[in-house]
Length: 214
Image (cartoon, rainbow, N blue to C red; front, side, top):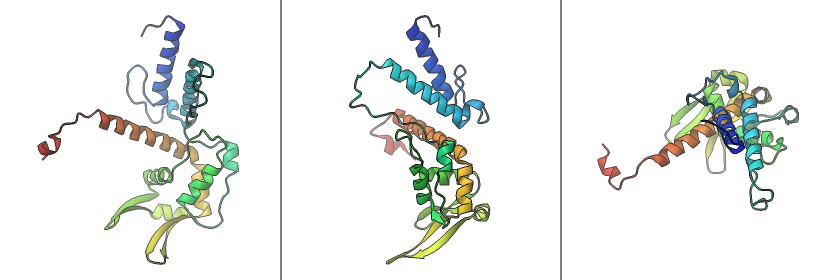
């Protein structure tokens, strides 16, 4: 793409930044290696921040500001926020763990970490596994996960019995030590889901589609 005017140069710069932020080669339109520096969560975060600032600069001052919601920024924890995390001396479930992580985030525009992103990362690392039950499926710790301090506790409620996965203080420290990897996993997970929805929406629909299936 040849660029000449300032507007064209800005559009080209945004295209390049957007491609890199999404983990793609800006000219070959292929996925960059996971080990490429541009896939580092800190670089991805910086690229999206620059894109957001560029887009804000293109909007007329005050145009729609009263109604416009602030753009979300991908989840991350600063060093100060990570140091402020309140570890629990008692074993806690992943919902409580992610709640405590999100409570340390000082920027209201930043995305919150979802507990499924934490357990999904643990599955990817071989510290948890997905098992199938008659009632559905659930994630449980592997031997490596249990050695780390993740365990399953059987509980009895008023009208039912159930299992809950709990994280020891040691396991909490492990997750906070790897929070940047989890943040990158969360970002990639959202990108995959967004791409899957885009592909699904692009599929042609037919009133006879169900009749043509095997």
